[in-house]
Image 1: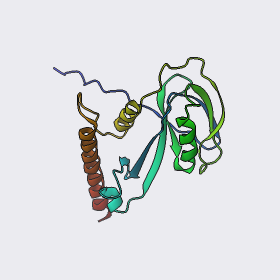
Image 2: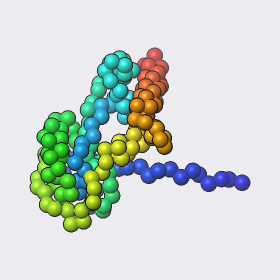
Image 3: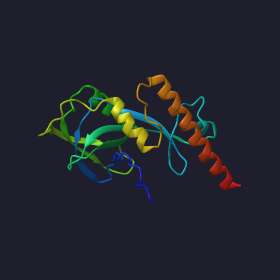
Length: 181
C-alpha cells in the first residue's frame, strides 16, 4: 500500500521586477535581508571569504538583498533588490517610513537598480513587521538549507547552516570540476 507523500512547506516566492516593468508591493518589514551567493547551476550560500569553498575556488560572489512584501494578490514573498542601490533601500526601510506602504517599484533597464516611484498607505495594514528570523527562514527554505530546530540557539543553527552550505558547495564544485575534465 502506498503511503501519502510527506507534506512540504510551501515555497516562498521571490518577486523580481524586470526591465521596463513597474509593480505594486505592500512593504511588510522595517528590515532588509542581504546574502552573498555563488552560482553553480543553482544558487548556493557564500559563508565568508575566509572559509567558503566557492570563494576559495574563485567562483564569483554576488550580493543580493530581499525585502519581505506582499503582491497585489496578498501573496507574501521576498522582493529582490540588487547591490547597485541597496544602500538607499536599506536606509529607507530601516527608517520605518516604508512599513505598511504600498510601493510602486520599477526597473528602468536590465542593469539599473529598483526605483521607488511612489508610496501610499496600505488599505489593509499588517499589525507587525515580518520579523527578520521569519524572513531568514523563508530564504533558507528557498536555497535548501536547514531550518532552526525547536529550542536550538542561534550559534548552533548558524553552525549547521554553514556546514550544510559548505557541503552543497563542495558537491557542486566537484560536479563542475568533473564536467570540465
